[in-house]
Length: 234
Image (tube, rainbow, N blue to C red):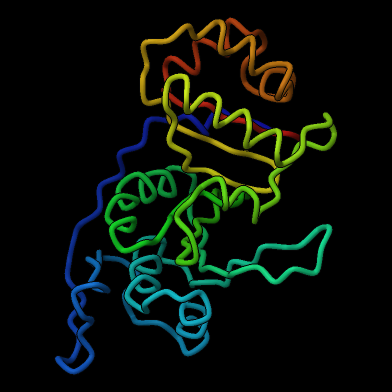
């Protein structure tokens, strides 16, 4: 998989506008969210049902739809080993650059409303951007997603343990969670990048063996340049 586009510096510009609603339908203060230009024709009955099922206000669905200019879909966490019922969310597909810009721009405002936006699935055409209302804990979302690298003997608990180690060591902010990948920002960037790369490689060899970097030194430079750690297991 070519990961060159995963670390592009993205600052896509969006023109802002407020979607006008009848006075009777205006959300209360806790649900109010800004809307942006784009696909703002409103939600279909099915899209509205997805929002309700996920415990999200329809304004969140409209925001996501306007940002991606694509339909809102149901985000479903599959149960690989159990029959446990998991919460659902909403999602929508967009390009890799737009997906990153959307997540980075709106994650703080959505957290204020107890909602978590993140990159949820890597697609040929970009990413599937997901929003949850059931939890804002990224580690719980990793558990729900059952993120793993079983081809290398890496299980969900191993990934959570490693991420928590890095969070305690230099601080991270997780913004990408899928069944075979995870991505986070580094908060304290005054670190030993070579040591970090050498720790990452045995834990996630595909980022070097099948990525755009060919050595741990290249990986260290990429992490330093982007300020992000990308884990991906083929």
